[in-house]
Length: 237
Image (cartoon, rainbow, N blue to C red; front, side, top):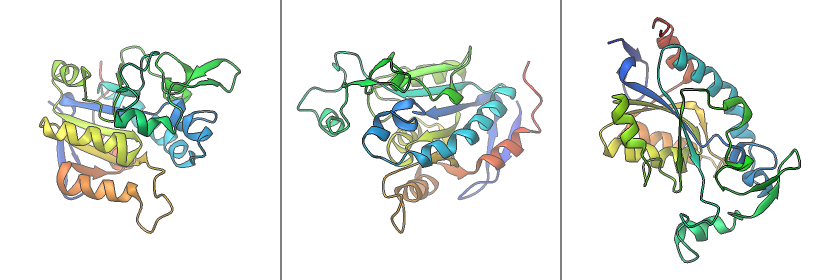
């Protein structure tokens, strides 16, 4: 066992590195790249792009310490059969984002909005999964809904989860809630998550979600605190 202590809100939290996994939520082209779904819909992707370098650093430090890296991807089958159908709320809410529509990627190749095995649902280039990393595709906001994420975490022996990615109030918070319901201890890195909804409001959805998480669903810290704690951990074999 290799225990680390994180400065966090609402109180410090201790983690066993050997039982901890790093979750990267939906850092994919449709959300964080020019020409992706958000960008084409007029959503400001600058906050998502801004967290990429910090997540890259966190992934590298976690990988050095031997933590499993799990990439979640919001994606659907080509026939959209897992999107719920035309009268399902999930499908209706994504219809305005043109789910399933053909697109042209930045390099001129064909793509499809939120469809698996396309440029759209690939991770942004800086966060391309490496050999040994785990990729879990999901067709709802939570990474646990009708996926094998829970089984994979149990197979790894994971008890503690570190969360990064986008967006804070939707897919990150949804997955954190479901993780907490399954008795995982969740830590969210506040400066490695981003949220375009209400970003210009007096209090953003990002801040509201972090408050929810620290009060009821887990703990909140910053990437610098997490990385500092990991620096005392020997490099994994």
